[in-house]
Length: 498
Image (cartoon, rainbow, N blue to C red; front, side, top):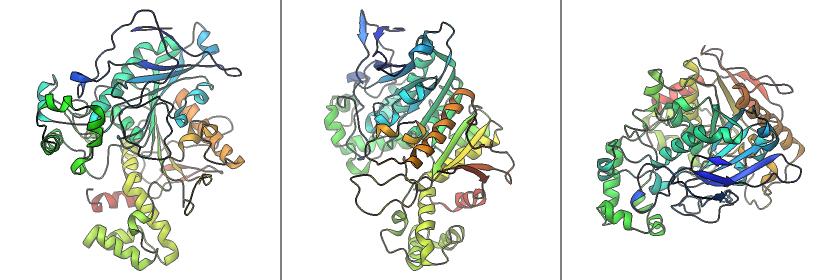
């Protein structure tokens, strides 16, 4: 196989499968040494045939969540690699121009990896598409802004290196995917959590929005209640952070070994994430949508019934109306009664449900809705879902069972990868839900519409506020009028930045 940097050799399709894999393909030069905190640079060509049979290293990160399992060998700054799954028999056809799914992992922009089994592309590729997963820099390595970095940049910007990695990978896919049987004009990008936020950012960035034919967002967008930091704010935070480490110059910062830099990543409570840098994101996403410049492409988007837990509101207090009201007073002050009116609890028995709803909306539900709302108002095809299937309790789980569909629970169902996660005793009901959600995803990647034979009808969201349809995905999937629009609008005026 020839890509624009040289020849690669992948892994033959396993017995009983038609899907061939290519792992660990570099899409940018290793961002090490003087390339730390710079835009991704083009890969240097190589001689001979490069093996593409092992996942590349994952990007620098700490162990954050127990549901992350990696097949990559280790963590390294040298991590800008992607993986491709392609149906070999279909690719062999000279006229093959298959749809492409580029999937972006989640992990709060501080963790995650393209090698995780739940993102494996074989199941999706077996339905007649090419699937790509990619790595992007995380935490301080991917989102550190500083005046000196902006000064040395030809674009007078710094901080969004992880998003620039994604844009570079997407450009690589555009240039090379035809070699794998894919159609560069039929690229759908998808992702969950920080991956979903990334998808929303790629749809508004002038560096990427013209390279996408469709988008899938699972639980998250950059349109949070707290405004995205500006470049000036990011630079100020970065300068303060560097000074706290007593390494105020770029040369000193770049000389810090990667593992040492990772150790002090959270020093002083510093957090690193996307910002309006004037380059990748010239303006807030809402402004881009309002001006009609966001990608007008089909979007499938939604969130889960338990993105956040009730305890995040109750602060681990007993679920009583009195404690719920006290928590609202702590969080919202003189706006507490107004929030209670939007998330009311008539009795103690209602508290877990409404506190879960509020916690979920505060975390990601409302941000996902803002993206959905802006996109459907643009007139582009928009399909909105609410995922509420409760997965089985993990074999090793302790404590109470989840109230609803917890954050990230839908990934294996949507990508057809239940068997890739042995932590759960999957039932026939789980496989039924997976067949439905995976079917919707496959159809959407192929046609820009999730509907197809054997699936419950999913209505496109209307631009009429009184007739918005939302698909509930569970053992019995169904469509219904979306009734939370007024609540979200009201919460936009009440929700404090956080």
